[in-house]
Image 1 (cartoon, rainbow, N blue to C red):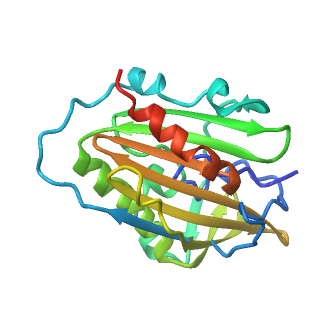
Image 2 (cartoon, rainbow, N blue to C red; image 1 turned 45 degrees about the vertical axis):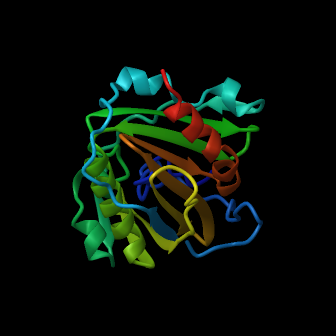
Length: 233
């Protein structure tokens, strides 16, 4: 049994709500174990004319699929909604977010699409989320969440009565991609074992691309995800 990997960029408790036990998958792409990290780079949004906001149906067609990822990837069924009480201890800024933002749910933008995959029959997972809204709303919304999550280097989440220690650490974001970038590493620890999740968000105009999961898989597919999401048509 293992801790379920976070599947959203807000995934504090996406890894916890279905938490039966833990994983030992606690290394990043370099094999180094981490106490988790996040950073934001890029220029702030400016008052310029923006392209039309994309519909959820249009975003769906821009998600990575098995043909983009390559062999060994299988779609991961969407997890049923959970109703457990979630409490964040030791991080007031995160507690104040409330709603889906504090419980690892979907960001509060009207147009969204998401997909998740497992790799090689192992505990490695990768997920992608796409959002479309005005550049300012996207920038302000994701920045607020990442700032809260990484503003506390260590805190605890109690989901359904199960306590899980979380460590957060800012990572250098890929500043050569998109208009703004955020990246972090989260370590979820319980029962003496840990799971590491990397989350990177890229805003490109009126699109927000979030790739989360096993660090090596996020690094491998981030460029591809952004390219497909921002391709014309």
